[in-house]
Length: 270
Ligand SMILES: C[S@@+](CC[C@H](N)C(=O)[O-])C[C@H]1O[C@@H](n2cnc3c(N)ncnc32)[C@H](O)[C@@H]1O
Image (cartoon, rainbow, N blue to C red; front, side, top):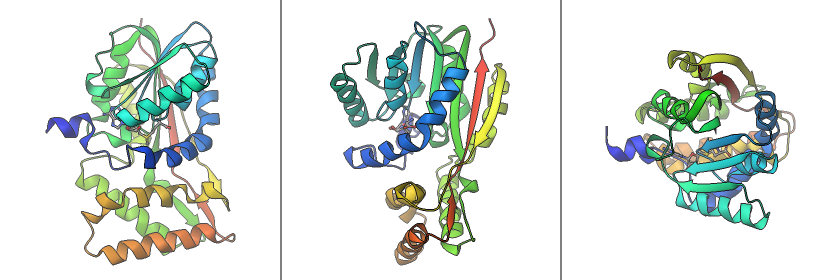
């Protein structure tokens, strides 16, 4: 496998400033769930936490404000710069951000109490190898916390051909890139397969009738348009599909179910 592919060359979303606004919405949608999960998993002052694929660093910064010493790692120079700027503006000192791939981040092994990621493994061609890297960063008895979606579960009610078509296209794109956009459903078994003790395997799914949040997945699919075009026989059909998804998002009589988010909390044996 080419080095770029392994280290993140298959990433289909924006890794520049134009992706920041969507990432901010992602944090609004999921941070409350992630915070509760991490607190329930035992995150407390004095612990050390590394977050891989941290994006704008919302969770890393929050963990630091709860008294954890936190490191955020992301492949995108741009996201790392923005995460550092936000930490600096908020005067948060016990957090650092570094650019790097989860596969070769040069972090010390056995150093952290918690290793965390969200919306990362499903973008990687070797998600289980990436979980192994996360586990290697943990101290014996340390806790791995991962949250990943299953994109097949995105739907509208009443069912709309546009949403069904959008999901079909994005899953086909994942196949063509050897990515698993359904990896969330495999999180817990993957943790077991690398020798961790699974303490919690759970899932939640957000639903919206209106608001900006409702269109989050349409926005994401539109951001992936350059990649989607590579598997598309007709660019006009893709545009039509995105436009029809937007119509659904504006229709207050249709509910949209976002991708089910799977969560795992697993312990590295002592
Ligand atoms: C969908 S975003 C999620 C960001 C953040 N975890 C969140 O939930 O708000 C995925 C992030 O993973 C990063 N990423 C992609 N491939 C990576 C890799 N191989 N190593 C580290 N980060 C990677 C991207 O740059 C992006 O910031």
